[in-house]
Length: 301
Image (cartoon, rainbow, N blue to C red):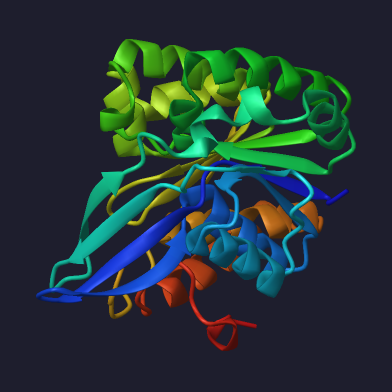
């Protein structure tokens, strides 16, 4: 089994290119991170549910094979289709999203998967990666299965990495979201959080919350909208000033790439400063290309 397991949903991506025109791709926050982790040398499996035999599910599996991602934890469901989203980009690279994902099989993954096999795979992994989007998509029933599996893996020494990627529209309300996110953070070794996310689901001071998580043994990477980064661990804080801006074509997937760069460096034994530099370098290249996943030839050294 892979050294890294990434849990979530890969969707059909329609990138709007003009009136009545779109480019088809395949992406999703934890899928994007899985691809970049694999490219950065970490053997990675993607755990999700897809349709069976339809052209979109076939294309996602083909994309996984192309990137070298293991499909051992993929469940195929006859008669179901993966979710779909469209992206509309503004001139400054910012984007608007439109989703069709209500019947996607990824929502039922923890009712479809071989849980004994999944638990064994997680327990033997180097790292398990997921996001708040992963938690939202699988619903309360899925979280009731996933969180104990994560806790058991963490007790066995597996690193859990969590991105607080908060999307209010996926949750019934911030209270439920906050409870689920806090539960995942309590199991995690690494947490990537934006100050905007923390303020949205906690309604509190992001720095204070990050410090509280760090005091409980979590390594927290706190990203501010202005480009500042703080890495908190125990009582220590390392601060990184914003870097010089790069030309932005599309910000889709930048945070996912940042997480992959940071985690790959930390798993390789590199220090926090090197990890932040690697994460910023990859994210800075990603925003200069359209789409969440850049061509392999564009990957930085």
